Length: 399
Ligand SMILES: *[C@@H]1O[C@H](CO)[C@@H](O)[C@H](O)[C@H]1NC(C)=O
Ligand SMILES: *[C@@H]1O[C@H](CO)[C@@H](O)[C@H](O)[C@H]1NC(C)=O
Ligand SMILES: *[C@@H]1O[C@H](CO)[C@@H](O)[C@H](O)[C@H]1NC(C)=O
Image (tube, rainbow, N blue to C red):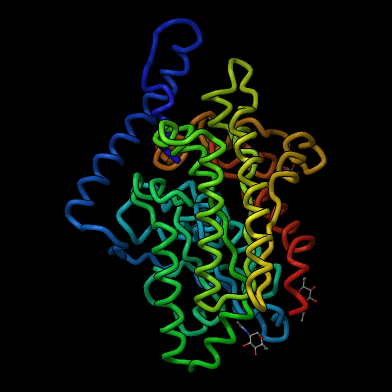
């Protein structure tokens, strides 16, 4: 996500480009730093996930009373990127992190946890609204209890994507490693709860996948890394087939209720408006077209895959339409500001640039749709998650 700095790596000092250069130099610097340390780490560590040190315990939420549990899904499992990463990146060697204030300032106890938001994120809200539990812990957090494991965890990692190059560059956890962790998880549960119980949990629970934004915003349009190899039509096909193969592997691991959330109109996130929206900071149309193209292909491939997999329900969950509706009708949702993030100037800050030392915050975060220049606020995430649970998960309830 930080690679956007590369957008203006060829700074020219003429006209409105100057502003763009000035705005993006800090990001370019961060990207280069990440890139350099990522390659260094890689030499040291070799490939594969590396659980990091320094466990920072997350505040324990109040236990949900057993009567409130919604038995439709015994557990929730999340895979993908920062939209559902509840803190895994705190335990790996990446700079794509959010475990410092003001991130988490509205999380229970005001604690930064690694969630890329001021508070809870969709992985938590979906678990909450389904009656499973109020927050979804990250799998890599040390000291998870049996109960934590039995009711689900997130395997997601901020900066990841369906294109393996996307997590590689920022050293996020690739989708393939998220799957390996899932299989390791299943073995653990078999170990203490028995095979039958583990099979039941995996097959009856919701496996939720959301990725693709970082492939488009960072890898394709940000660093232009894949533009030489693919036009956008073939790149989005590649992303969709990688997503379908991930679905297939989840199925082979035992998951039977698999939901994929598509990509939002990421041309409208504050950083893209700043980078590509011109002097008026309009939505970047080209990226929105790409997002829609990917969504269509994802939906089609999941549908055809679903028809071939016995006993499985595969659901494509649309985020694009409601997100667009929120941006076009902010007042209807109680938002005063949709063009900039709450953190700092709201034009470029995210990750390390959004911090308590240099970033002033907006007065009322609830009236902002975006928390930083890339991620929605907790209130926006709550609205989106409510829509998913109320209108999209229906196909899962019957089987
Ligand atoms: C679980 O929640 C869903 C969505 O709110 C609802 O449709 C379903 O009936 C609930 N099931 C139980 C057992 O409470
Ligand atoms: C599908 O469900 C039936 C009935 O529960 C079961 O016998 C069969 O083994 C399942 N098939 C697969 C591939 O999971
Ligand atoms: C903050 O914004 C929310 C959402 O628009 C609104 O309901 C609330 O009254 C605002 N609070 C203040 C102190 O202005």
